[in-house]
Image (tube, rainbow, N blue to C red; front, side, top):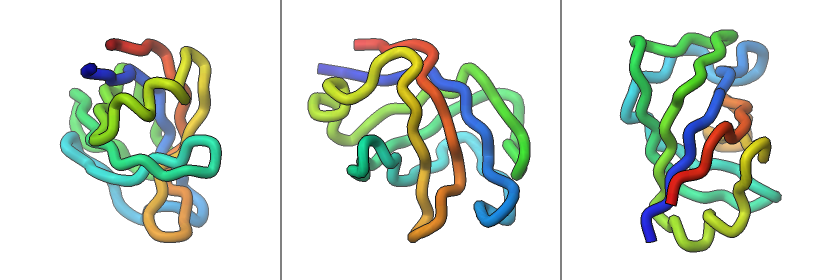
Length: 95
């Protein structure tokens, strides 16, 4: 099963990431207190702290398990170590 989502994300400005992210960013996604490895792609150049971007595609290394946890309007976070660096919500699920 191939599962991905299209989401709207906001790069956290205070206490989050200091620099921008680019398409191809890889990180753990926090969903319901569990971390899942994901790969993020988008158009339109870099996303800087404080920016919001829609139309972001997120693919997962464990798609079968993640598909059970995400629905349209589900919220999630990207983490780097103990810090939350991105907040987001699911706009569309693709399987």
